[in-house]
Image (cartoon, rainbow, N blue to C red):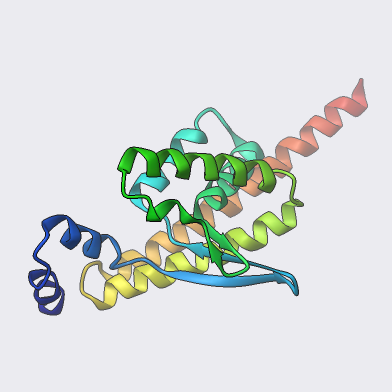
Length: 180
C-alpha cells in the first residue's frame, strides 16, 4: 500500500494520479480465436460495468444471460489482431466517449451475429482476467482474498442458475406448445 502512495506522490498532475489509480486493477490479454483472429480484452471500468447493467435492464432468464455476455464483450474488447481501437488517444473527453460509444455499438452488432458457444468462450476468458484483476488488487492490499473468491464464485453460481432456469423455462414452453 505504501508503494502505491509513493508512486502516486511522484505524479504532479492530480488527474494523472487518478488515471494511475484507475489502472491498478486493470488486466489485459490477447486471446487467440483462430489462426487469423485474436482479440485484445480487458477488465471493465466501473463506468463500463454500469453501462452493461443499464443495457441489460428488462431482460430475464436466458435473454438476460445472453444480453449480459454481449454487452460485456462489446466493452471488454479493446482491439483486434494486436491493433487497439484508438478512441482512448482522443484528448477531448466528450469526443473520446462518443467514439467509444460508436465502437461499442459496432462491436455489439458484430458479436450478436456470433454463435452462442463462441460468445460464451470469450466471456469466460473475460471472467478469468477479471479474477486475475481481483487477485492483483488483493496482493496490493486493496481487497480481501475472501471477497475475491466469494465474488467470482457468486458470478459463476448466478450464471449457472440463470442458465438452468432458462432451460427449464424453455422445456415448459416446448411442452406447452406440444399440448396445443
